[in-house]
Amino acid sequence: MKLGIEELIENVKDELLCYEDMEQATQKWEKEFRLWIDKNKGKNKDILVEQNQVFFKIKDEEEIFEIANSYMDAIDEGSIKQYWEKF
Image (cartoon, rainbow, N blue to C red; front, top):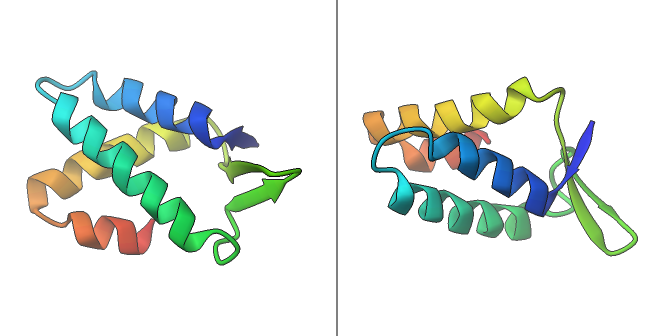
């Protein structure tokens, strides 16, 4: 399944906002994700560009939860850099 980048961002942000006091971390995730997309466009098999639109390929909706939960774990562990390296 593929999602438009904006839809993916909104879905992940919604998940992150389920956690308490996550407004700043959510904004940071969005900023870092947009940078990651720009950096990896054409290099990552999960980033699809079709007719000047960018999509992200995911297995299912569960992957959205995994993206958010992994980011929360990275915050707790102080491993945000590694999160983006493995994304």
